[in-house]
Image (cartoon, one colour):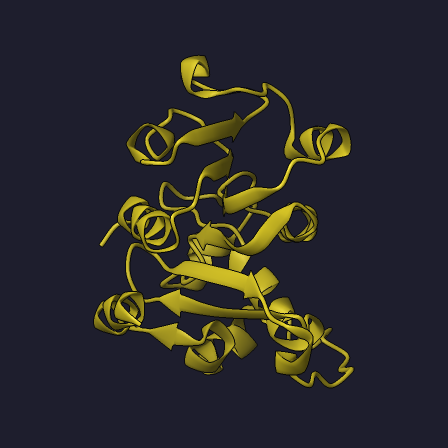
Length: 200
């Protein structure tokens, strides 16, 4: 199951009308998304025909206050930028909407090494998910164990907020901690479990 299939299944289930994609690049995702109104943000796309806003995501969010039903974050895969994109996306998310991130379940540490950057480089998006677990009481999420890890996050109502401890995450923001606690950090579910959720 590819991330495009997951996004389209969420669009269909919730009848989403507006879609924002951060990091369009070649349009390999954007062109396959079936949503009535689509926006694409990328400062240097390979296929500009799939981009509606040729700028960085930070610039886009500083100028736009539009609410989106579903937002796909697949831009610069660095912790700082993904954190920014999550914060900005949450502020521009429609009620009942969700945010999707790709590449959140790297197989090995090399895939997150910014300096080496192998062909299958995934960045450290997974560290942003770890921060969600401990620092965002108004957000719930799960990660589907497919296509390098696809995480879906959404806001929860006040009475559903999770209790988070104010922890020093310095020692936890590491590959070793993530690897030892992968399933718990990502709230990992199978493809079959995700398909069952779509039926609810």
